[in-house]
Image (cartoon, rainbow, N blue to C red; front, side, top):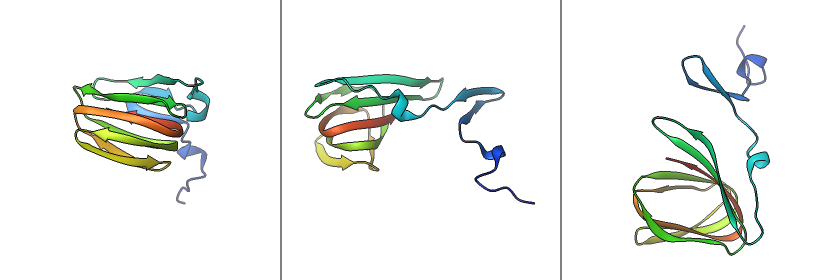
Length: 119
C-alpha cells in the first residue's frame, strides 16, 4: 500500500539535514518578531553550504541598498515591498520569489513583511 501526504511517515515537522542529524522545523509565524517601526533578522539554520534567515520589516522600514558578497534567494511569506538588486528594482508580495546575486541590494517594506532568505 502507498503512502499519502497525510501519513505520519511524511511528517513535515522535521527536515533531513545530513546523515542522522535532524532539526525541528518551527512555524515561521512563531519565529517572526515584528518590531514597531523596525526590522528583525533571525538565523534559522547556519550550515556549511547554506544559511536560512527570517527577516521581518514593519511598514515603511527600509534596508537601504548596500553591498553584499554573496547570492541570496528571498521568498516573501507575507506583506508587500520593493527589492533592489544592482540597477534593477521591482515590487514583490506574498508568494513572490526573488533572486539577488552578490552586489548591491536592498528592501523597502510597503506592507509589514515576513521574508525567508536562503544563501
